[in-house]
Image (cartoon, rainbow, N blue to C red; front, side, top):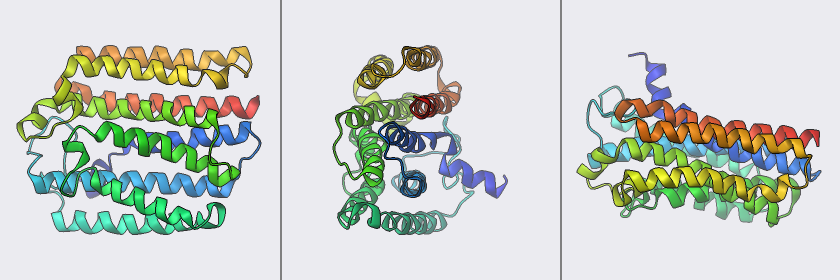
Length: 292
């Protein structure tokens, strides 16, 4: 198997729109409020992508160390499990990528102050704690909470803050929760597909705890609640802008239908579809903010 393709699979590029969407949404809100600044925005973009890659690498490495993955799994190919990547190599690349992310994060200090160092440490710890440590979040039904926080609330509010200097804005906060809920849906699809394997190795995701039927309903509701949280923003934009959330809800409902009618490897494309829907919404929202 091509080495580049192996590392692309390991980084799980199809899920990277999850980290990008939060930064894009924050930039759209910054444009709307007249405070957009391209340099801190770009730094946040790079940092968010690197942080997610670190989390993805760490997830693969520590799942392998715990014996949670097995050869021929239903989901995307795991390089370490299949013997394509040496465990020590993945571990070293994980921490090297984390170091680069920390350097990029430090470049945000001039825009947001030294307290961002503490925030960066907090993010780095949780990027690893998702799968590592004595109480890995993904093994105890807390993965969804981590995604809501670190792919929604934290990146949206911090990206907006380093551009505007405003730490709390009610519209931005609501948007950050909405983006987080969309991100949670990507994890729901992943865990929905892997429920049987996860249960067998003692990994108690929310799908294992509550079952596929309940979490499929959660998936559907997350999208509708997310659009409801954006209503305060859309209500003051041109009426035609409501076509954007309506389009998202159509795409989201179609994806949900795919979730409840597919199984096994057939669910893999829904990971990319769910994350792409999230990114497309953020891009269209930002375009609307630029044009309004």
